[in-house]
Figure 1 (tube, rainbow, N blue to C red):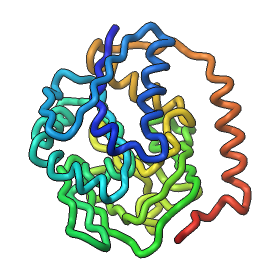
Figure 2 (cartoon, one colour):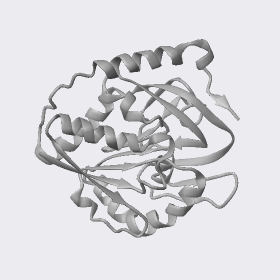
Figure 3 (tube, rainbow, N blue to C red):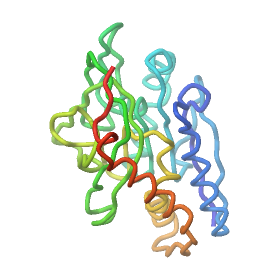
Length: 253
């Protein structure tokens, strides 16, 4: 079996090790004998996204988002929206989440137009939300699944009725620090503020994305189980640290 992954703007949108998410997907495929072909999609490229099973869009600072914003809207938006409507499995982190929404309006500089995959809007805030986060994932991802990651953003993201959150904040700030939501979901597209990178700490989410992609391409596929004991022990250790009192509050600057 083979899967193809489109990796958007890897040199510009790779904050806090977001490339590690692609590496985890590649390794978990390799362990199972699945070929994962990764193509890097940069400024000026016009890929045929209907040829892909997975896509990844990492996070970046505002200056990087300005560099890619017009390119995303002008050369990739129509193709990407159509592919997501057709079931493309995608993970977008932080700046990627914001640019897949309607717009991001920073405190300084002009608004950045998004491509409206997600029904959400992001407004710049005066303080940054920084710290470790625990999120109770929505039931479709697993009734007991809690995600852990690291957030660092000033944007306040508000979901509209057209998309669901990835989960509810247990510890941390989340989308806006008010309504308890974190991330966004639309069809097979997931957006989140969780860096770290996300998937090494949350292998169940990595397998969820792979399972969706395989089912879309091949029909029902049962993923071979992997020995995730080391990942589980590491995850439990990190979880225990985040739950300690001095880790509970997201730092603000």
